[in-house]
Image 1 (cartoon, rainbow, N blue to C red):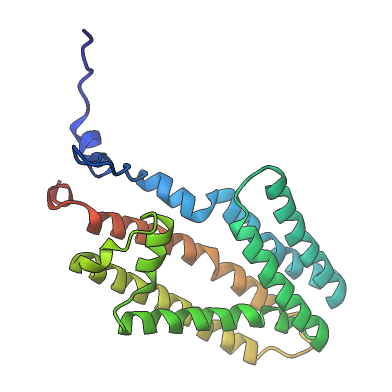
Image 2 (cartoon, rainbow, N blue to C red):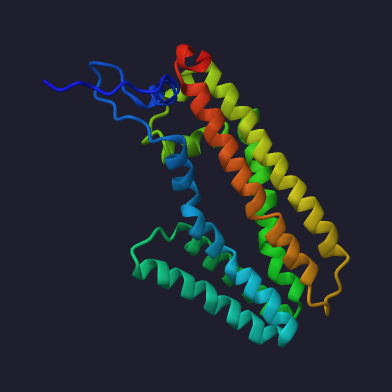
Amino acid sequence: MTSETPRDPAQTAGRAEAVPAAGTDEEPLPSFTEQLADQLGGVRGVVESGIPVLVFVVANIVWALRPALIIAVASALAVGGWRLSRRQPVRHAINGVFGIAIGAIIAWKTGSAKDFYLPGIVLSLVYGLAMLASVAIRRPLVGWVWSLLVARGSTDWRGNPRLVRTFSWLTVLWAVTYLVKVIIQAVVFQHTSAHDPATTLGILRLALGYPPYLLLIAITVWAARRAAAPPAAQQA
């Protein structure tokens, strides 16, 4: 017969929501840190996905536009290939390759460096408007993403008014962030000459990219877990 070491009450309360109720077959939710890291693809994945843009900004200053585009696309492919060879998640790398490739094709055809950033601006606009529309029809997109990535496909949250409200305001927060980014980048894009290396747009792409994304992910994971927790755990 072994004795059990007493646990710190704070640790026990912090892990309460991760323990399934007795008599159920549900698996415990990962911890806040584990969920956050999973959604970000790891800190390394987040950093690596911004490498092609940084490479383009620097290469476009040092060399001409077309060599810079080739180097940027090559760096995106290299990052994706490296992660794939190490059997690491490639979600961010694939998104990066796709976005970089589309921007490179447009900039290659127009001969203007600023067009390299145009797909990202348009995509952010689409994201923002789609999120607002989803809230208007009471189908907040953040809730659906949470279902796919965290809740193993379960849509039980739709029957929980507290979760619906939480996912709605989170979706609005994401949408406003995307639309603010669009406005800032669109103004700079409009005032950037076609012959300009568009270095300012590159800096904005990096500054308005993953820093807000990291913050939004952290807020989303925290708010969703808090709303999903039993009333007793919320008051603890």
